[in-house]
Length: 409
Image 1 (cartoon, rainbow, N blue to C red):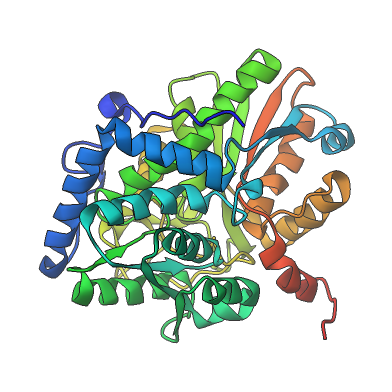
Image 2: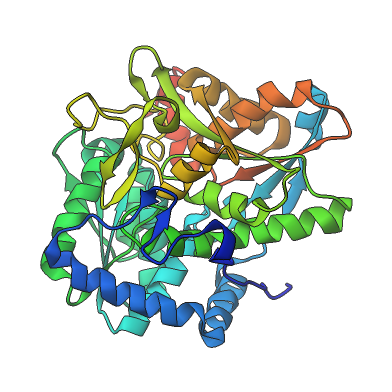
């Protein structure tokens, strides 16, 4: 296997600024009790970012443990069935643990070791970040606790067992909607009391600076590989790159290396849930407004009093009422277009991809596939679409089966 080659993104054009802002979004909005831990992390990552030895170790683990580079696969039967643009999948579902999340957790556990901390905590919705954190913690021999909403535990029992099997403690969160937002709140409370020996492995491009920049950097391997693979396999860049967006790490990772390629259209797909009009959704950039959430200024689904609204998605990884601040900035300046897909269309895409390509996608990724199913027929056969297939669907088959009317013993 070819050794992974990687360089962190050049921030001179796209940011963030020295104070962690992408345009008006980002920054740090945290209690004083966490400032020392965040400053320590910022210093550690700033030093690591310019240390070639850090990136060599990161790339070595991605190559020999994670299994990178992930393939860029032509979806021949789906392309033929839809007509129009050629469709290619960036196969993050083939990574060790089954999703893109492992790229970030390997990077953050390397930093944990560099800072001399002995424990990590994480939040998780769909469970893939929790599994990836537990995996990386086991790899490095570090204690791990994962906070997960009780509703997500119900939906993702397989991943709960995987985390426990890997030696992590899974903490059920019973407050609020008992989903991702509430798990983040609980993890933040833990970190406030334990930051001297604990690092909080945030799973997406969100939270206080430097998390959005750092997580994006670790995930940029996805877009760097995809860009090089397109040039190698087709001789040209794609016309369009599409990824689902919850917090937004898989999308940021594949979009960022294409930002300077003005002819490449970038499309993020949020969760429209049951219906955008009835507020049973998680389409933050379509329906939200600027606000403060989980240590950052970003776009938030909130009421007129600034209270965070309940959210819903068929996908446990997309039902979050905010989005990473870099996505909010890209949306504001128009570099990335954002749309949304409802539960029914995502579930239909889930089964369509399984039947046409022999790939069972995560329900998160199925939202991106659903948009491709609508878009591809309107494009030329000379055009190409790269879709970030951010995770595999093992974790979702029981929940999808329930929604499709299947019965389980």
